[in-house]
Image 1 (cartoon, rainbow, N blue to C red):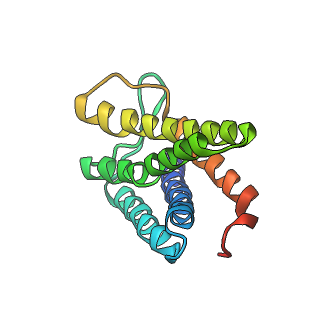
Image 2: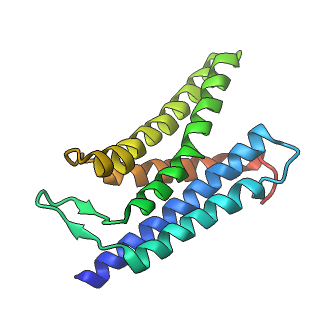
Image 3: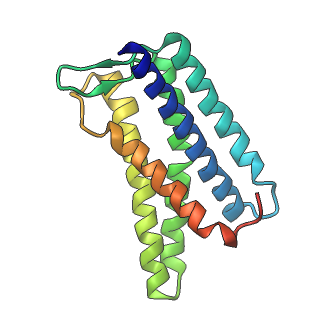
Amino acid sequence: NPDGMKTISLSIYVLTGLGSSVLAYLIFCIKFPKANPWLGFIPIFLLGIGITILDLFQGHLFLTETGEINFGLPPAGYIMMFSLFLFTFLPMGIILLRQSQSAKDSFLKTKALRFALVALGGFAVALIELILEPFFKLEETPLNEIVLGFLVIILLIFLYFRKNLRPL
């Protein structure tokens, strides 16, 4: 069903943009506490909207021979999508690694390290799926759904710990 496939791809891009925007908001809360965190949220959100619009007009979602979903974005779309992860997951992973090293309490060290691994793992998946596979014509990896899973985890973490942040 082509209409259903298009709806799925558009939903994935909207959710990826929104999840990445929340992560950018968190990065600003942590690293730039005096700055307005919306300065992190808005550009990433607009990038996510741009990817969604690009997919709407130029994307051609299809199933591969192995049954994987290929989003069929033009090269600019893959670069834009990778940028979401480059500007959110990588910095958050680095921040959390530093927090795991500086924390005095072993529970906090472990928690920060685990979250850092999630963020850096999400970045690694994005690097494979959005840069290495499409541009170097590598074999497909079964990681498409994991990327969205990482964003959902980050969103749930944000919702759970949001009481310690400045109000939205």
